[in-house]
Image (cartoon, rainbow, N blue to C red; front, side, top):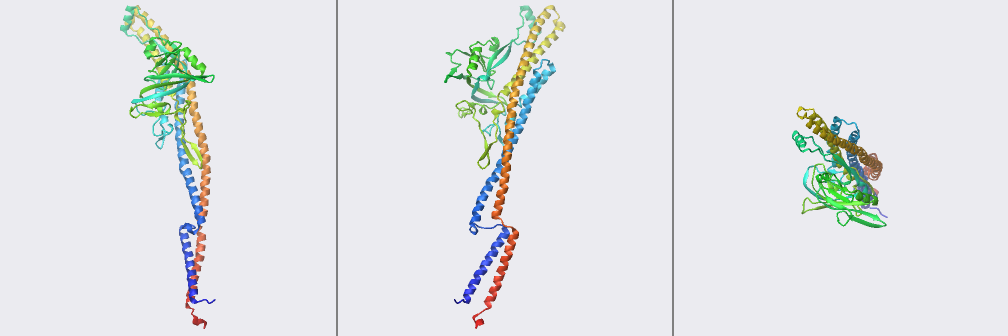
Length: 512
C-alpha cells in the first residue's frame, strides 16, 4: 500500500489534535481536580456521582438540620420540665410544713406568701417554645398552653370525662364567725342572741377543671354489667338521684346537707357534690362520668381547654371552633410530632401538656391557699376577741360574758380551720408526690429519647464521613497524579509537534 504525504500529514494532525485534547482535559482536571466535567466523559462515574450526592444530601439533611432541631427541642423541653419539677417540689415542701400541728402565725404567713408567689408559675413553663413553636401543645404549636392575659369574653363549651377515682371526700366549713363590733355586741346582749356555731362537714365531690362556670348542660355516668353498657342521666328526674343547682351561700344555709340520693352542682366552685348512695353506686360499678358545661371568662394563666378536653370555642358565634382530644372510647389522643432523623427512622420530639401539667395542679394550689387563709383568719379572729376583752370599753360583765361566747365559737372555728388545713396539706403531700412523679417520668422519657437520638447521630456522622469519602474517591483526582499525567501528555504533545515539523520538510524528491 502506498503511503502518501497527505496521508501522513492527515494522520499527524489527528494525533496532534488527540494529544492536544488530552492536554486540555488534564488541564481542566488540574483546575477542578475532578475526574470529569460532563457526564459523557465517563457515564459510570457520572451515574455513581449522582447516587452518592443524593445520599449525601439526605444524610446532611438528617445530620445537620433534623437532628440538631430535635436536640434543641429536647433541651428546651427538659429545661421546662426541670423548672416545673422545682416549682412542684417547692409546693410539696409547703404542704409538708402546712401538715404540721405546731404552726405559728409567722409559719402560716410564710406558707401563704410562698404559695401565692408560685400560683402564677404553676403552668408558666407550659408556654415554653422552640423557635416560636410551643412545645407542649401537640399539633397546636402556634398557640400558648395558657391564656397570656385575662380573656373575659372567651366562651367555651367543655366536655370532661372522669373515672370513679375522681370522686373524693372534701371538707366544707360553714357558719363562719367574724370579730363582732361594739354595736353588734350590744345588739346581741339586748336580743339575747348567741353567735353562730362554726362547723364543718365532709361531702363526696367531683371537682371540675374550672371554677366560675355557667350552665351544666349534661351529667351522666356509664357502666358495663354482664356485657351490657348502661348510661344513667343524673339530670333526668326519673332517675333515683335528685339533681339540683345551688350556690355556695345556699349550701352553707343548709349546712351542706346533701341528701343520700342527691346530686348538687355548684357553678361558683366548679364542683359536683354527690350523695352517699350516688357516690357509692358509681364507685361500686367502676363507672365513668361525663359532664358538659359552659364557661365564659378566663383569668390570666388559666389553661386553655382546647389542649385538654373535647370542647367548642364559642367566643365568635359566627366562627365556632371544635376541638377533639378524645376518641370514641374516651381515650386521650396522643398528638405526636415526629422528626425523621435517619432513613426510614423517626423520633417523637414533643411531650404533651396533659401528660405532665395536670389540670388539677392549679385547683389544688388554689385550695391550699384558701385553707391557709381560713386558718389565718380564724386565728386572727381569736386574737382580736381576746384583745377586745382586755379593753376598758368591754369591761362590763355583760360584755365580757358575750365576748366569752364569741371567743368559744372562734376557738371552735380555729380548731376546724386548723384541722382542715392539716388534712388538706397532708393530702397535698401525696398529690404533689404524684405530680412530681409524672414530671420526673417525662424527664426520664426525654432522656431516653435523647440517648436514642445520640446513637442515631453517631451513626449518621459515620455514614456522612463514609459517603463523603466514596464521593471524593469517585469524583476527585489527586493533584499529584494529574500533574504527572499532564506532564506526560504535554511532553507527548510537544513531541508530536516536533515530529510533524520534521515530516513537513520531507518531500518525494528526498527519496529519489
